[in-house]
Amino acid sequence: MDPENNGEVSEMLESPQQEVEVAVATQLAESAEPEKPAAAENLLLVVNGSSAAATNDTVPVEDDSPRETPEAEPLVSVAAPEEPDKAPEPEKQELEPEKENEPEPVSEPVPEAELVPQTTQEEAVPQQPGEPQPPSPKKVEAIVEAQEVVKEALTQNDGKKTEVSEEKPAEATVQGEEVKQAEVVPPVVPKKEGTLEKSAKSADPTGAEASDAATVPSADSLSFPLLKHEKTKDALRSSRTLVVIRGLPGSGKTFLSRALADAYKEHCSVFCADDYAENADSGADTHKALDEAVVACCADTPSVLVVVDDTNHTQERLARLGELAREHRMVVVFLEPRTEWSTDAVQLTKLTGRKPATITAMKRQLEEVRLPLFFGWFLLPLVQDQLRSTSSDFLTTLDDFKKNAVGSSVKEGQEVPLEQYYKAKGSLHSTTKFCDYGKAEGAKEYAEKPAVSELYGSVFDLTVSALFVTPRTFGARVSLTEEQLVLWPADAEKEAESSVPGAASLPMGSRAHITLGCVEGVKPVQTGLDLLEILVLQQVEPVTDLELGSLRFYGEGRWMLELKEPVCAAACFSSFYKRRGPSHDQGKKEPKKKKNCAIL
Image 1 (tube, one colour):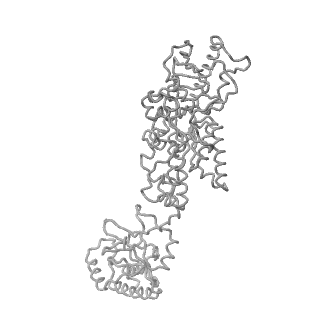
Image 2 (cartoon, rainbow, N blue to C red; image 1 turned 120 degrees about the vertical axis):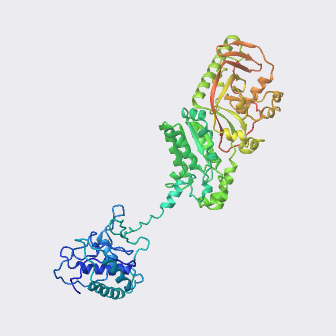
Image 3 (spheres, rainbow, N blue to C red; image 1 turned 90 degrees about the vertical axis):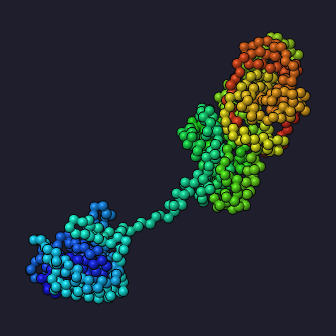
């Protein structure tokens, strides 16, 4: 081929094969320039009928020095230098193997007849001094020959077609117009397996694998007083409370425990049974490890709110956790998720992947202990100490009054102080409804009252207005407000009519009390009946006015002290569970006295 035919082809064709052909022609033209070696990566593609320069957008000036014409090699696509706003071009060593092994597909060739008129049109444009001259007829002939060489080389390349991007073709314009260069699309990095599933699971507030939008809890599912009532939250932050979360797998227990942790922040510690099941051989080992961690937290950390997240679907587990709370002078609250699917066995089976029979059996056990032994107001630990101190002062005052004003028929050495005569009965509380796990009359109806559900876990200020003693019990009378009477059973006084004639005629809430102690063999339920007996009697004149208040005597060893300054007792409306034992009897039993007290 004639070496004098060098310069730039002023018109490039639109098809990929024409790009290859023009690139070969341009390479042949540059072979005459000593400073510019022919290299495929330094060429600029020209498409859409416009012309552009090769190698850095300039056309090399013709050089008459003879040079050997290199053989035409089948070239693939030639990547132009990228503009600053384009993605970075992959390294050269990564692209060259692709050029060798995956040649770009050749589009339908443009008839050669179109090349000559376009070249002729370019030649008609006046050339400025120093600008490259258009190719001569010999140059056009060289281009045609190069086309034939390229076609033959592509045919021999195992029938493979080079890949040319149809979405982002290389484009160029001349004389100051914008140039769009061929882009190299970086390889797509595949996502790690499990990333999406893990994200969906972590976003699921129920702690179970998310299945659809129906498993997103509503705002009402967190409408617990422990989370919504500021008075309750403030009271619990200054007290010690054990929150036992129970419910079926996937019902939203973890969602609820996280909400409590967010509300109480550094004052809250959460213990999830799942964290201890991994290293346990059985459920019993899991509960043992869990209980040990809870005990250690109650004993060693300043957390005021300890949360236990587990199914807790048996009476034994609920009773055990209640015992732990009382041993560490904590109020216990039992919460159950309120998500829309919390009791839907079919939905929970889908969420957790557990067998339907397992969910159904667990649901049945949970239903059996959904109702506690009783509901009531449980005094916060500091208030218990205050009331016990006041009651102790009352018994001491009553003992002194007996020695000075009342004769004793008990022989010397047989009487005992009042404080030793009564035995304390667990943590201080005021029972609202005895349920016997749903067996007591009216238990289910009481538990289904909207007020019971809405106010469960709330902290109230009870008013202790009087202290009283009888030969069987020692207690405190509670005067209820209108708000508190909402939680009081309407038939509480009527139920006692058979044991205390006239009790049904007393105002609602008259039976409200706190048992401070009982004689050995007497159940705490007797305290409320003794209070009703005192109230049924006609009002008597005070025997004397003491420092604490007015002391009245009602006969048969019954005394009542009306406090000058009622005790404000903060108490949490909650429930109580006990280990299985003999059936509970609320009837009045005659105590078996072993010791006598002169005042009684």
